Structure formats: C-alpha cells, structure tokens
Length: 133
Image 1 (cartoon, helix red, strand yellow):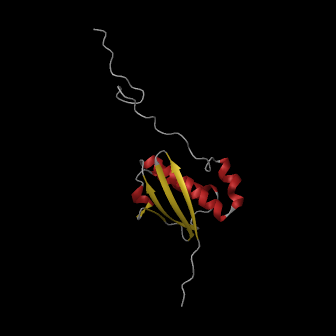
Image 2: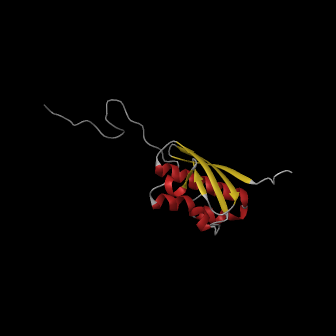
Image 3: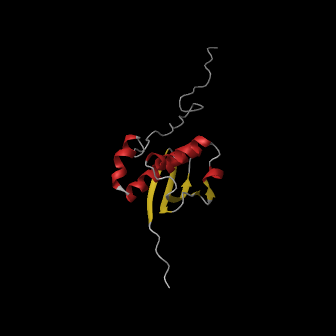
C-alpha cells in the first residue's frame, strides 16, 4: 500500500543576511522553524505576527502547515525572510492572491543591507574621536 503524496509548495525568502527555505503543505496552521515551534523560536510577539501576516491578510489562517529552515542573520531578518518565503509559497498555491500580497508589500525583497565597516574607523560611519593636540 502506497501512502498518499502530500503536496508541498517550496519557496525561498531573504532579508538582510538571512535565508529562509519554506515548505507549505495543507494542514492545521502549525509553523515549525528549524525543528522548533514558532512560539519558542521567536520570543517577541511582533516577530511572530510578521511571520503569520501573509496568512492573515489572505484569510488562510489555520489552512496550511509551514516547515522552514532559516540560516544567517538575526531574529528580525529571519522573520522578514520567513514572511517573504511564505508569501511566495502562497503564490504557488493560488496566483489570484498576488494583488492582495503585492498591495501589502509582501512580495518585494527588502534590499537594505548592512553597510560595511571601513578601515581606520570603528564602524561604517562612526569615526574615532578627533584630537586637535
């Protein structure tokens, strides 16, 4: 007997230096990131809300399970990468969601990156204290 094939939709989201590989499958709304539930992975409520925002805006809360692997960056970048990945996966499920997601800016990759540190300085813009004498 062959088990029924579960249809999964794959997408990748990026933000700052974070990369999220998202797998979307029909289910009960369970979100698992790097093997941990959403509530334990992101301790801040704002980050959890930004991850599930694509589902709320498209009225798909509780209809899909999300499994994701996230690498690099910090919590804010990872949450942004997850949001973009989920939005792209939802587009693979239903193309008619594009205007809704686009109006909220969920399909645009945030291109802002950290400015590199310059030599002879303590940071990207900060300078060492100037001493006249």
